[in-house]
Image (cartoon, rainbow, N blue to C red):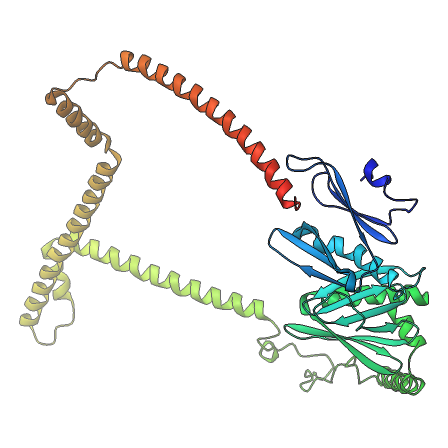
Length: 435
C-alpha cells in the first residue's frame, strides 16, 4: 500500500510506522506522534487528510453494524472523533493505541506493542516487556495495572465454560486476567511468546525449570526417582510383568514307556473349535441325507401302490398275519383300496398346480398383447372423438417475433439497471467511509 502524495507532504520528516486500508483508496497512517486519515476523491468529497495527535488522555470506541468510531479525549482541549468501517476497527485500533501509550510514556522508546485485546470492560495490551491491564469503559486512561516480564515466574490457565482466567504469577503473587473461553488459548500463547522472547528461551518448560521454586523442584525430583525405583523393581521381578505362564493344572497322561497318551476326550472344545464345528456340520448333513432318503422311499412306495392292481393289494393283505381270520383280510383290502385313489388325487392336484403356474408365467411374460390392445383402444378413442391436431406454423412465426422484441427490451433494461447499480454502489462506499 503506497503512501499518497498529499499524506507525504504532511509527514514533516516522520516515518510511517503502520498503515491500515479502510476500503477503496482510503487509508489510516500512524506515525510516532499522530494518526493521519486519508480520504480519496469521491462523488461527495475531495481528496483530504485529517490529523489526530497521540497526546490523548483516553481513547473510547463506539461500535456499529457497518461503521464504528474512535474518539480521542484531550481533556480541556476537547475530543476528536473519526469513523472507520467496523470490519477494520480493531486492526486500526492497535497502532493508534500503541502510539497513545508511547506518547504517555507507558511504553519505552524501544518497546514494541505486540497485541491489543478488548473484552467488554477489559483492555489488555501485550508489549515486548510487559502486560498492561486496564479495567474501565475507556480503552485507555491512567487507571491501569502492568506486569513486567522480569517479575513473572509462572503462567497458567483456569478454564471455565463461558469465561476463563489467565494466571500470571508476578513477584510470587498470582495475578488473574479474565478472558472469554474461546479466546483464552490465543491470549495465553501471545503472552507466552512475548515472555519467552524477553528471556531468550525456546520453550516454556525451560522457563519453568529456570524459575521453579527450589523446594518444589527437589520434591519433584524425589518423586521421579521413587517412580524410577519402582519401575526397576518391577522389571527385576519375572512374575510382575506376567511373562511366565502358569503351570498346566491338567498334565497329559503317560503310558508305561513314558509316551503321551493321545486321548481325544481329553482335548477340550476350546482347543479344537474347527474339529467340533466340522463334526457338527457332518452330523447335520447326515441327518438331512437320512430324511431325504426316507422321503424318497416313501414316495416310491406310494407310486408302487398307486400303479399296482387291486388284486395285488388284496393278495398282500391276505399274505400278512391275520389272527382274526378272513374278516380282517377284507378290512385290510378295503383300506388299501381307499388309499390308492387318495394318491392319484394328490398327483392330479400337483399337475394342475404346475399347469396353473405355467399359464400365469405365460400371462406375465406375454403381456405385450394386452398393452397393444390398450394402445389401440386409446388411438381408436382419439380417432372417434373428431379432434385433429392444428397447424402451428402461423403461431410459431408470431411467437418468434414477440420473443425477439421482449429479449431486446429486457437487455436494454438490464443495462440501465447495471448502470444505476454502479452509481448506488459508489455512493454507498463513500457513505460507509464516513463522508
